Amino acid sequence: MSPVVDRQQAIEAEGLPGQAELEAWVAAVLARHDVAADSELTVRLVDSEESQALNRDYRGRDRPTNVLSFPFESPPGVALPLLGDLVICHPVVVAEAAEQDKALADHYAHMVVHGTLHLLGHDHIEDEEAEAMERLEREILAEFDIADPYLVTQLDTQPAPHRDPEDKRPDP
Image 1 (spheres, helix red, strand yellow):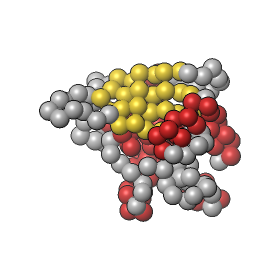
Image 2: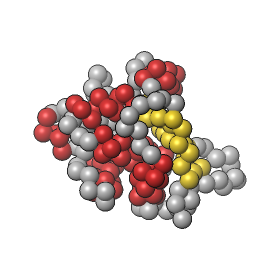
Image 3: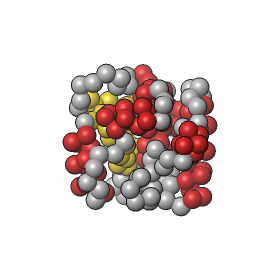
Image 4: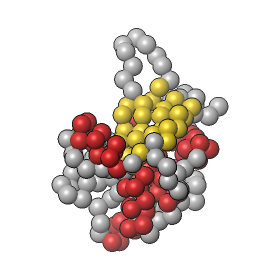
């Protein structure tokens, strides 16, 4: 059984991932966790304005960001297969892929894997958590023959793609 991915496209642009890609990337994450294979999540592909508004309203950062994760919190005693929502900003992902000399599809895969791990409770606030999360990301992306997304970053001494370059604190 495969995950249920509600793909919402709020931007017209080239290079957006398709339904099958999103489902494959999410399924690879879910296969490593004790969750139903048919879990549901929304992936919303947006422009800079929507990303900035959400980032400002929910995280207090008035700028667009690559991926925002909104985990679903089930009411007590109610079991639902909902994981939550990912909001991915296409212009930011395109710019990061170009800056990091990565294929756009590979960077999208990384953002979906990274965001889905957040929906499952992974985080990178503490160094130990960040290392564990990044290790999982590398392993999952390797299943798709995608190179270590942090290798280029480390060699270039740029902040990792999910870290905020302005305040050096990792995004939650």
